[in-house]
Length: 335
Image (cartoon, rainbow, N blue to C red; front, top):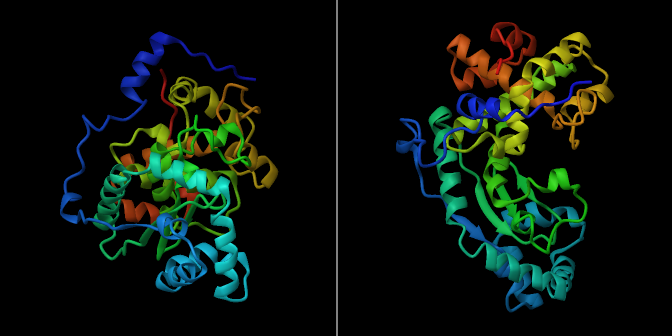
């Protein structure tokens, strides 16, 4: 079993070579993105459903915003709008929900940073995919019922999920290793990674670990392309030390995959050990972060683009994971 070694002299080098990408002060939005910058409108729905409530007002809001209402409340299973309005009235008058709403209003009174980050990311998508239509975007307080609802037509952000990690209100159904990713710094990368699935082609017949690794690698590369000034940890959801430790031990991690002949493994249980949510990848080391197969997949995809001179749309259209791996020429970096 491999133990990760965090050697400070090595970390200094890794931070420069592989670690966190440039900060916003050092990073420039790629040429061509600017001409696709468009001011987006984020509709704040929480006030409409929490302030000065009555059944009549609730019904009016449901009817006035059918796209939002259908996406947000369709799964509640009520037969008609009147029953739904009555239930929402009860929920949103609950003292705990009212306090949660007030806390969200305090912390997210200004969402200009979210708006700016989304505008840059959408400009990137429009640059690579000119026919892309930006969805309608809403914010809401879901009572920790929905973090993000994302379709080709709509994005709904459950702002309560993205309160600071030390806030007294936290979702109770998420373990700490996942919960730490639920904050405003990770919000827009989560959205763009979810959107990437619209473009990420895969072979349905390939159920291998390699195919899953490449799928996630393409998703993270997509997000990094659209958000080049965002550090890697906010894209993949690792702590900075986890990224640095992974680079420091990349050769040993890769050796584990090769020695155990894992790349073409099709057992779902084994695949989940390397790409599924977990606090660490115990099969490699208790110090190895969870989802390490996704991180390796990201590196393979980066090398594939670097060595083949293809465009992002060509990458996302390529559904042959084995070809991507073969033509990547991937080799672990040596610290």
